[in-house]
Length: 163
Image 1 (cartoon, one colour):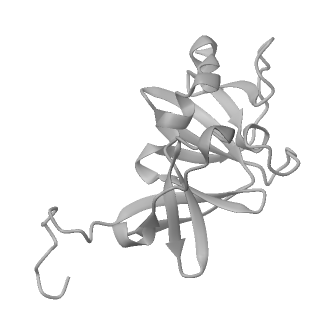
Image 2 (tube, one colour):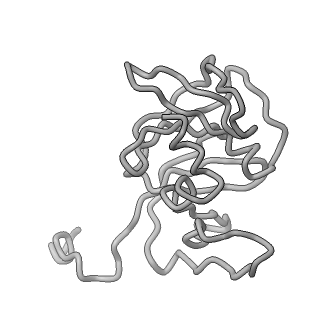
């Protein structure tokens, strides 16, 4: 900040929010960077009987049992494969540690309020409550996900039983 103004002023509209961007299929998504604990490779999981298909199982991460959710299956994008390139984003969501399998992690980007458009209304055909908006960065569009809303949604409540 060359002028010295605005650096401590939180009332302005130029507050930039930081998002970790990741890919699922051909789409780019973004989640609040403050929810991310770490990024790691896919490891062997312990399967849980009768869990939905998108919950791959659990891992023991430094003494914490972490459910692993494959977002590619959850969002029905792409063919999930598990190899040395498969990425798991470890997040702290609603006081729980959760792992989310994605195709790849891209970058950390800052978006100002002007770069974020409201999520489109899809009606009852599609649950888009967890989409906070669409971010535009250069000519790229990011689907911004409220990870807490998504992980606490009706069909994801099964995660309470896993922990």
